[in-house]
Image 1 (cartoon, rainbow, N blue to C red):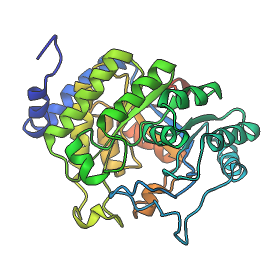
Image 2 (image 1 turned 180 degrees about the vertical axis):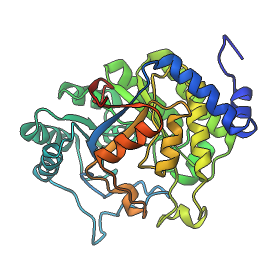
Image 3 (image 1 turned 90 degrees about the vertical axis):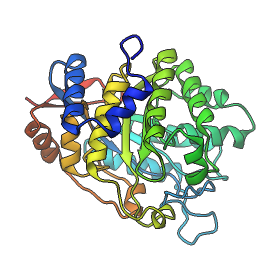
Image 4 (image 1 turned 180 degrees about the horizontal axis):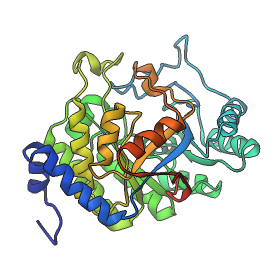
Length: 349
C-alpha cells in the first residue's frame, strides 16, 4: 500500500483470493464514508443510436453493420429528435447519443443532431459520443481530437459517456477491437476532454479474454488519470454478453454474476478518487445489480426508454420506476433520481 492506497498486488489479491463477503464489506464501508446519507441514485434516460453503420467491427458487437448491409441505417437529425421527444414526454431527462464509426458521418452531422434535439427538447441533457467516436471524428475531419471536443463543447455539451474503454490492455484490444482507439488514445481523449471542461464517465467491459491482472491495470490507469484531471464522474463496469457476436463463438458463456459484484467492490476500493460507482440492473441481472449496491456502488444506472446495442446481442431487460424504487429500497437504501451531473433531482422517501 502506498500513501494509504491499494497497490497492484493488493488489488489483485482482493480480486482473485479474498472472500467475496470480505471484499464487499470493505467496499461498503468505503462507500458509506463517501456517501453517508444512504441514497442510491438513478437517471431516467434514453439511448437512441443515430446509426448502426460501423467500420471498426469490434468482435464483441452484434449491433454494427457494414455500409452495404440491407439493414444498415442512419437516422436524420429530425428522426433522432423525434425519438428523444417521445422519451422526454415519458420522463427522460438525459439522452445518451451514440452511433457507430460511420464514414459518412461528419462533424456537421453531429452538430445537426445536437441542434435538432435541443430544438424540440431544450430541457433534456444531451450526453453524446464516446471517446472512440471522438477519435474517429478527428480522423474524419483530418484534425486533432481537441478541435472536435471544442466544437462540441461550443454547442453547449458538457458530458461525455465513457464507452469504448473495454479493457485498457493492448493485448486484449488487439484481440477484440483492433481497429478501435487503443489504450493510450482512449485515455488521451478523456484527458483532453477534461481539460476542455467536460465531465466524463469511465467504463469497463470484462468477462471475455482478459486476465485479472488486466482488470486491475485498467482500474489503476483510470485512477492515475483521475489524479491528474479529476474529470471522471463515475465508473461503470459491465460483463461481455456473448449472444450473437463473433467473440461469443470463442467465449460462449457469460461470466458468473459474482464476478460483477466483486469488480464493483474492487472499483470502490481502488478508485478512491471517484465519487460514484454504478451497479446496473440492466447490464447484469437484478440480483447482481442489487448486490452491487451492498458492495460499494451508490448509483443504479438508468431507467431506459430505448436501448439497441445489448438488445441486438440477445440481452433484453425491462423495468419500471416502481421496480427500481423497490430494488433499491430492498437493499436498504433511499432511492433518488439524478441528472447526468449526479445532482439529485428528487428523493423518494
